[in-house]
Length: 159
Picture 1: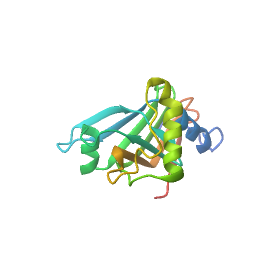
Picture 2: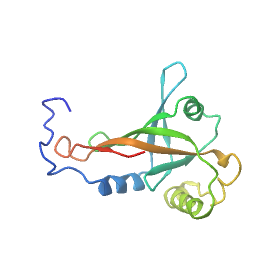
Picture 3: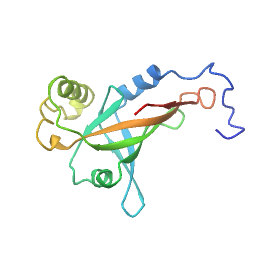
């Protein structure tokens, strides 16, 4: 970080990934930024299920963000209000068809979070050849803080 941000000089007070991961699991709204073919940004809120370090979300492959991801998988995902924030850079794209325990986990999490809002898919909703519009975001790195700048923490993930 640039000088003057007051970032810690040691690991004392940094966030641990388990704390950040728990926030991603519980988030109701994820903001996703993709890039249009002409280079302009596109940001859209998404509902989804954070499972095993990835965000599973669905929607029509005809949406702008899905079409953008098909041409350029680079993506940024964000939750928080600015006072607290988690920003992840990674890639998003169409999922392979999902069945079995993963399908059950995704459906259960989406139902838990959005069922009262009218959305509770079945576990086999993404088992067809086109995965039913299911997409998956996988992070490469993250930046998070809950008390900026004292716990500002960067995470990197192996691919």
